[in-house]
Image (tube, rainbow, N blue to C red; front, side, top):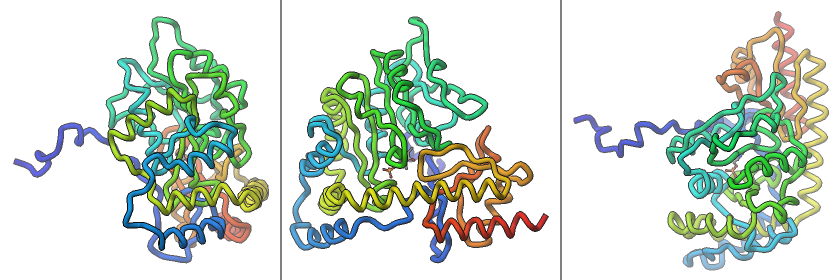
Length: 360
Ligand SMILES: *Cc1c(COP(=O)(O)O)cnc(C)c1O
């Protein structure tokens, strides 16, 4: 008997997601996992510190009512239209379980957030990938299907990851109208950096689920908070799944930290504007070095150099203390995904690249 015989058979088939490196060495310029380069609002830190002294021996509110209310108010929704999870990855997993397990394929772009495929393998959901255009853009008419071609739903990231390219709301509406009897999931992890949110469409589309995270634009990747917005019947389905899995995905500290993050509007505005302005500066600097940079509405850039192999560049940058992400995936293996850092971090990257490219 091999020790793997202890496993449930499905475990052999899983292909887990591999997150970007979280280096143990300090001092690296970390531009590889799209974290916010700024710390969270000081109000978040003091709210968490206060809460740490108040009742950690008690379970948290299983409904996360205070945070749901704060998020609902921010988006002009009701609390019944908001679902919370332990990071948006957990929200996505519950949504795939709740909405996409039909005996027909789920549609998604060939280049997108690679966790989607991982959930499909976990839950046995068949996938049909729809190729992006040669310019790595999503063309919504490619998602049309005949009546005989049933689909389980559609999932996209908007702006897309790792391209950074955003879709206008009119295109999201087209997707919703193409598949009125299935859920269209729009993952808006990066929308606060310049994209158009589909939350405005929720009132009109019973098949729309929009997923957000506090990990990127609110600098809280370490706290693990994500949420979904949709009409209340979709939220009810997610609650059923969640309460069949873990009634307390958000702990007491995350709950108060999340509420404080939404309360500090000024800090949110200031930091997201800073990231967007660094993004524009970094785009120009990379273009000056000869890179082709896709137009990004996110906190990262996807860029390639016509003369340099991307894997070589990534390895060389690492030896110079700069981490970026390189995906060994078809169509994008010659690109680097570079998270937008502080102005000092961006300068460091550009300096390192300039030295490296000068070697040839
Ligand atoms: C970062 C990211 C997530 C996951 O965010 P968490 O809330 O930290 O789990 C989800 N979707 C996309 C497209 C992302 O880039």
